Amino acid sequence: MPSIQDKTWIKLWKENTPEIRDRVVEWRKDNAITRIDRPSRLQRARRLGYKAKQGIVVVRMRVGTGGMRKQRPVAGRRPKHLGVTRIKADDDMRTVAVRRVLERYPNMKLLGSYFVYKDGMHYWFEVILADPMHPRIAQDKELRQRIPQITA
Image 1 (cartoon, rainbow, N blue to C red):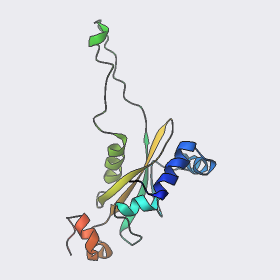
Image 2: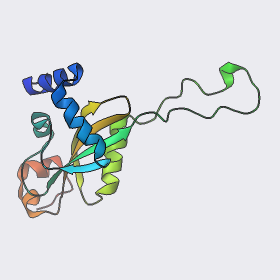
Image 3: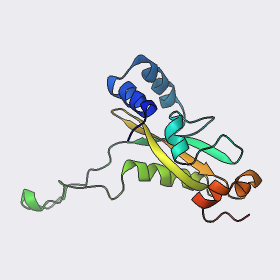
Image 4: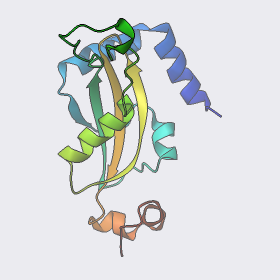
């Protein structure tokens, strides 16, 4: 069940309000992987395990759309057997975003990720990471349960 804050964010996104458009203009100028101070959707991030403490990092990831076309064969054959149409991606955009962030931050463990915005060219996701070796994270009982690799 979406919270009031989630419903508000979805409404802002669907109506394409000026507040969110101004934010996205800035996001397009940023790098694809941008570390941010705090999550855009705070309640959603808290449900995934975010806490405002040392050792937890929030990253906004931009993923480009497209790239789903397969090269058309040179030799002739009937259109049904060209193998160009009905090509589906094995991974959705969110999985691609998480994988790219984890490649950039190899020492961090994934707490969760969520959708932020989408336009005609890009998707934006926010990914929450925790450093299992950080003392503040290793002492936190709740985070130890979320990430089984953490040992006190």
